[in-house]
Image 1 (cartoon, rainbow, N blue to C red):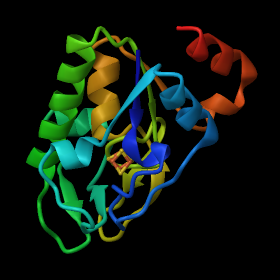
Image 2: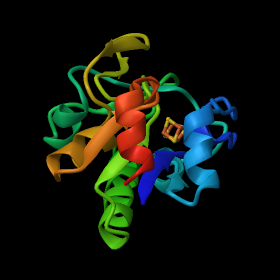
Image 3: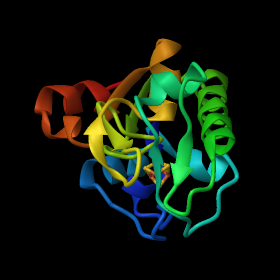
Image 4: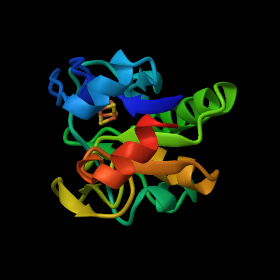
Length: 159
Ligand code: SF4
């Protein structure tokens, strides 16, 4: 079983109340090989919600207590992001999941690209909070961009 970002399945769970459906992720769901989760909703945030960014650094720094996650409105939502990451890891453990496919560029789900910025939000290098926690615990993280690689796709569809 693979865990996937819920917005990639076509469910309107992102901060704008929209989704980013991905054909290959939907195919995994159709074949019964994946379950969808939204770490930000699991962390107790509403939909739609204010956009958020990691104030400085990346998801690893949030886990280490060195920085915070702040909304565009200036609200500190670090605890929500940590809680969502922990619930997502718990799901992986309960279902024996070792691979996940998460939405690129998100402050939770971004792998290698996330939302950062001291005064305003922009795409920056680094992992989101959930990605950082999953990687720290030995889970293989892929983005929807990685699925364009047929070798990776074949590996995941046959897991
Ligand atoms: S990127 Fe992750 S946290 Fe954001 S809406 Fe999609 S599943 Fe939820």
